[in-house]
Length: 200
Image (cartoon, rainbow, N blue to C red; front, side):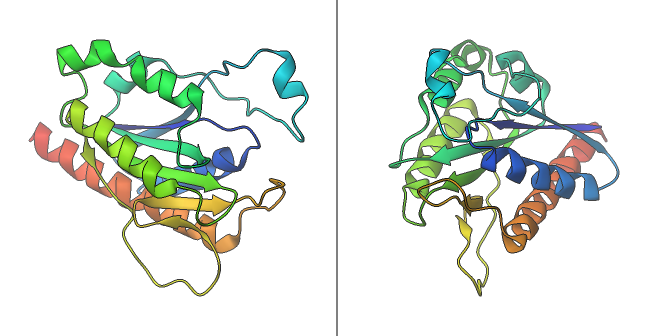
């Protein structure tokens, strides 16, 4: 059975809500896989998040690098800001160095999804940076792909996304939810097919 994990860092829950939709998409492929959502631990000082508007953390377990090695497919949910990773996410990726020497992640699959406050907020740079990390580990990248869009939505060919606005108060649209579910389903189908082929 294929194991898929979704790893997120979220401050205003937008990435978490997208992750739930992606999980639904994975579960639509109702055979041959299981899926879990994990979050990256917070590294701010305790008093800082309390001062942030509508700050909230989901009640899900924290991820460890061991979880990376256990998975067949890994989807990363990242909030984009000025084209850079959150420091917490970068710290987690950097901690995977011990897996590199063991080739523990070789031939796994990876994908990405985003939140951003505006459409042009550097999510492409986030994708390029993550793909570089995936390549070093030998992880095969599965993109979302392109499509026609009739409304303003988050997301790019690299992965699904949502726009939060500068005040972080915009909610995820139904179209963004549909795209996230599509990405989860597509990702699961590819990972499951690979795992089944490897086991035959």
